[in-house]
Image (cartoon, rainbow, N blue to C red; front, side, top):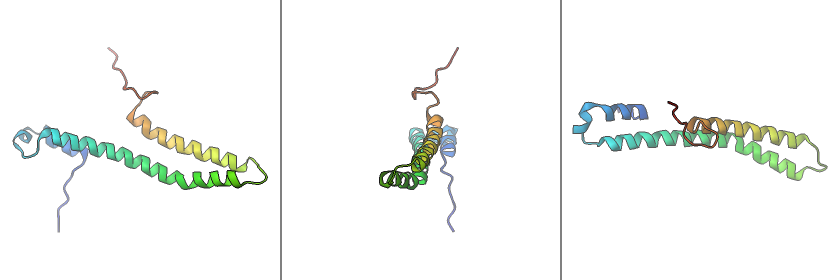
Length: 110
């Protein structure tokens, strides 16, 4: 039976901040880089999950819009609602990464 090792970004930072880390085999900078990479991958995974959730519905809505004869507002309204839900889900992820409107970091006020 193998033992699971905690390699979460928080744990890697704790190890890097440990006083004994300077004498360890793994440099502190490498541990911090791995932690940052894991956090970035978690954000990409979240965006992939949102894209996977909405991709099929958006494709079906688009196909129905293109093939609809005669034209009505039913598929248009469904497409707009699906696209709004997709944008809201992606914006929630982006706002965690860049809380300001244009993505610049929030300035500290003194």
